Amino acid sequence: MIKVSTPSSPPQGGLSVDASETVTSPGEEKPRIYFKFSAFSGFFHWTTPVIGIVGIVVGLVMPPDGIGGTVCASYRVLGYPCPGCGLTRSVSSILHGNFEQAWGYHPMGYGVAFIFILMVLTALVPKSVAQHWRTHPPVGDKVVGLVGGGAIISLLIFGLIRMFYMYAKFPPNTPWW
Image 1 (cartoon, rainbow, N blue to C red):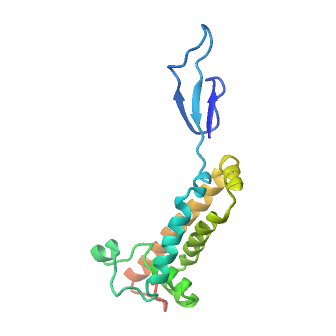
Image 2: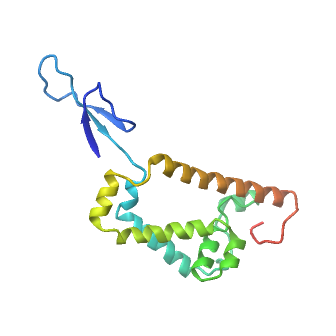
Image 3: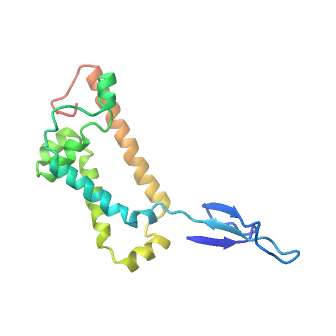
């Protein structure tokens, strides 16, 4: 959304651009153009369902037990898994119906699989509804930020706990440890 405003009434957040080449009358304030960004509005871009479909196809094609090696640079270099290790195998297990195995590979795989499915479902949202939600999001940027930030913090905490147990040589009886 683009909003043209005078300097005396700046919008909440966004990026302001000075419209210095605009012709104004003497004594009149030059207008400024503000671009309002919403984290939610980008969710209805045409690439969203494509990314979701690619994630689901990769999960269905990949064997739930993995490809026989690791692609994690952290594990190859340091010998310890990164916080995201096991997510692909977890999503693949979920899409193949192996829910207990998915939990063993990575508990957050359920959230990633849900997001992929949600991304595909955005293609089914009528265009008029999507356009309305771009300008009037049903959830605010703070909610999107809190949920996204909470997911990242949870992933990091999970990774630290897993690394602690691996380093301390006290692995529980689950594969993701």
